[in-house]
Amino acid sequence: MSTTSESKLYELIELYDMQTTFFKNALDGISDADRHNRLNTKANHIAWLAGSAVEQRYDMARQFGHSEKQQGHDLFTENKGIQDNATYPTLETYRTDWERISPVLRDALANATDEQLAVKIDMGPGVSYTVKEMLAFSSYREANIIGQIALWRRLLGYEGMKYM
Image (cartoon, rainbow, N blue to C red; front, side, top):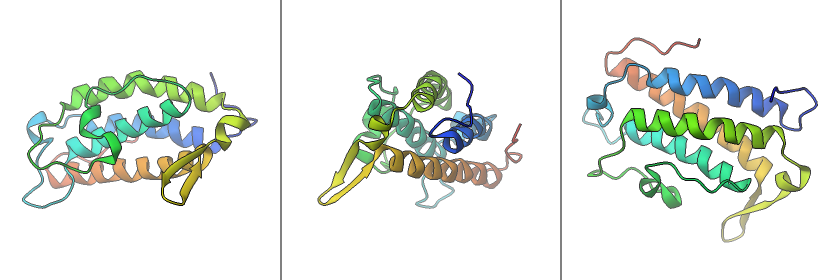
């Protein structure tokens, strides 16, 4: 479905479409040997960053009734942080999961009703956000993750991320 300016989420869908491509471009050419490389820091590595972004898209799709999970779901459930001794899925696994969920979630966003967007998500004691508010935050977070992966590309000696 194409995005029209009448959509309640027009601007978010425009960002979503860009970030769908940028995520794939950020991972392009990175070896699986480098996916866990933290360059002797405690920073989140590419495998965790990529999996976290994929998990976020699946989580948002669940808000619209989709029940499927990414292949690395157990590593990210309940917003788990990076686990030092875990072996994360390959970048190809993340690409496959990203390709599977992205059109599903995009369709849900393009067809979201006011009622669906107004549903409250409980985030903890006394904290809740609407689905629409979480979508805005998720868009910001996704862009941040893509930027971190793009930085890792350069730090690990890869060429910069392509935008097209």
